[in-house]
Figure (cartoon, rainbow, N blue to C red):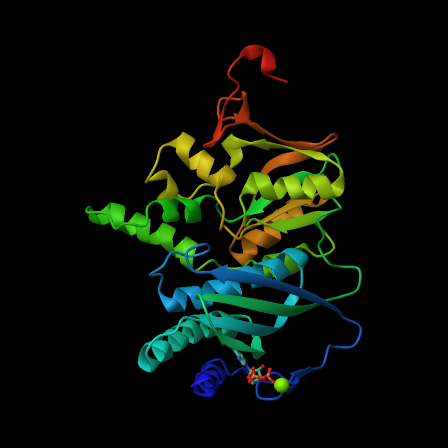
Length: 330
Ligand code: ADP
Ligand code: MG
């Protein structure tokens, strides 16, 4: 049974690469790292009920498990090459198990083909439904995009649009009205089929001073950059890139909250010295994802947010709000 599933996975994800000397089937894969390149490696786990709701289409789960990992490589400016897949499958009848594996492999391989990623091995066990994907990519020595290079005066950018995935998660149920349903389907696609910004990450090599992918939420992730770099950041809510689908399903304040605090966007947030900002923006526009300036790096610590009306905001338990009293404003 287990071996039939592995055979299916192998057949469904086949991807020819010269640097795979030995793929699925032996005790370990044998891989040739191109001479003079550094290996960038990352791993992420998705657990049913924690990282995706029960009932998510298997193909979406397979796609997302690879996407969140490719997003980590994108944030490092690495070119993806190989993946490992550790599958924990619930006990169920053989045909249901095969449908699940086929669905996972279909979504996984759709994205893998787009980035020429070869599945070179993994592990298959029984237990609560979860999958871990490990990815490997290449980056020229010293050129990886790290979190610790941001400097006061750099401008802060983000690719694409923010908040869609979080709004999609909150509005999972289908809508009655057909325009509203179209918008919701678009938001759910952002949640289930995130597109890792691999090309953008490559374009940022040698130009961005720091970079991170937005998985936990813009403010949380930008705060990681600030901590690693020993700086602070100011974000202007009025500059946040919001999709028309997001603005069509909630008011401006709610859209801002989704964009600031919602997770699962998998856009890149990065810092660039002002002199390079124009060329970087032009290049990312050419790549199709675009990049929007949302703030700047400052001396100090932490991330501060200026609201749409120009007043500083404070984090609250449920989102971001104006300072309750005037004196608290910086
Ligand atoms: P071993 O017992 O030697 O660890 P396994 O029986 O677990 O080997 O796996 C046999 C082969 O199938 C190995 O090459 C392994 O990498 C591959 N494999 C197992 N599970 C998966 C999976 N979910 N995805 C891809 N390859 C897998
Ligand atoms: Mg073995």
